[in-house]
Length: 478
Image (tube, rainbow, N blue to C red; front, side, top):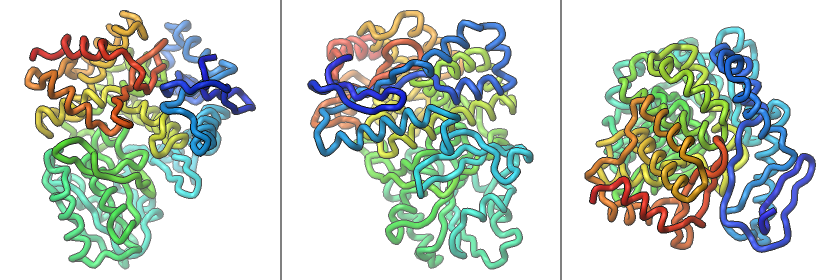
């Protein structure tokens, strides 16, 4: 075992007694994945026609020893929390993921076509409801509303489509509920403190009190800003996420990351603040532009690459069905993505190490978004190009083989996403913008890179700087 890896064996937790390793490792498919794939009708053809792939998916879950390599030296004051996080990660991979992250039946919801995924955070746990038409289910919404006042935050694109339906769902059978709304401009370029103040203005004008509930109705920008407003307003009020894009449904609405952009960096001002629930109505994707749909698939692909090999292989077989908006395929991709995200968040809520692996492609991607100008490329487009860059760098360092690198490029192309950054973003811009990335620690750039078989990655500052420079040379024209 490498020096001072934190290790978790079935039934025991400990550390080896030497100097610390320099990165966190995220492992492959776990029992919940295999079970979910086996029960999903879309995956049966994959299991039947490619039995060796199914076996590869099972094997990592049966290893007697799972390791999480630490990002930083194991100081005495940090060791206990790091061990606890690792233990929680392994516990989350066993026995149907305990009460936490498995899909479950809840009050007959399964019988009504509603899937529930739990995010297990102790007394701050919350459900993710997934189903068609559930935006009209006022009973689901109102069970998570506190107090008698609600502020719905949305944007000028989503408001004409879903605002009145949301207000009707909230007030049906609840005449005592006072619902107000604020409609913000649409786009990443408006994810800033100036726009955030519009939420505070409306909350104060309508006398929202500490028992009020903020409802985020829209994509990732709306969810991030509403969550940050809820975390800040009166030092914290209740909030609910109703994501309406693939990107927000599979990623940003789950896990409590909230915030706004700064001109020097993306999401640099924010807080960790969990919602009371996430309500995902898959019917809202019918109104989503094709470009937005593809953008969200970049995050779906990510989950397969960093921790869920069987899910990635399912995507390779079913990408055309996702792009065609087949209901069953989209519902499964959303469910499995939420399960993966929930498991990671339950183990590492505030991104002490493991959760950082969810940022595969994001360090390059955020540099693209900022360098080009927020809103020019969608977030998923930038992440897709960043993921290809990370894959090429991983291959350049000998951490993955050429076959996997090429599979990554192929699936991103199949999802109709870019595989190269825009020519307008220069090497110098990449260097300067990556230097202020949120994952930089003590002046050291840390990246999420792929290492080992499909489904494995590392979060590390211990990489060959020449490989990074060579990757920038490969992908940047100037």
